[in-house]
Image 1 (cartoon, rainbow, N blue to C red):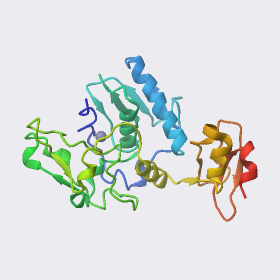
Image 2 (image 1 turned 90 degrees about the vertical axis):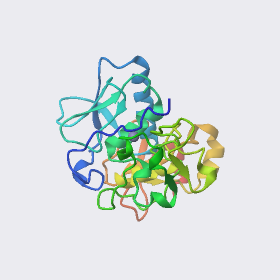
Image 3 (image 1 turned 120 degrees about the vertical axis):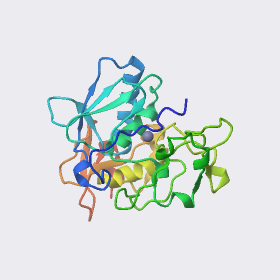
Length: 271
Ligand SMILES: [Zn+2]
């Protein structure tokens, strides 16, 4: 059911949840898995954590009494607050929310992101048919000003895991509420398989994660076949601050303020 993560934002307590740095998390983010969560939902949370670790510098750790944290609970639906509310917050994974990409989507809200079609420039890319929206639910198609959310200087992304699908909140089951200005993307919007490339780019820009594709990437991939195929070197933009859990070493790139972690076996490729 693709309706699962629509209309899923709790009202933020303050404005500028996305731009305002007070709503940004420090890593690792403490988390609690509620006892009421389905086993599958718990599994999906850990799958989503692994995707965040693989594709960004966002990391999570079990709760140990911190003031701010995310508690995953089974409530009615899938929903989250936007940004770190500084008080501990609920991320609900209700019945049917046990999909990796649903957890990724809700965690992107928790990390400070709104839906893709909330962007100021969305009308250049999609048509929103408000007269086809179920009365009372039009607020789900609000746009937000540039002083409230930032697109991190990235283009509109039809492939974002934060984009609604065509029939979101429709009152007539055969008539869409969103169509794309470029017809080829009509069947793309609303995907919930995984992050898009742009989703992770924005996440990494917002949280100051540094990503470096190693310069001999193609040859490394060929040499090590699938072992390192998905490896990207990611570290926080602070010296000495990032330690990977795998047996990796830290290398400071020339003229870069960032340390990156690289498997020992790849040292030879880092110039
Ligand atoms: Zn959402």
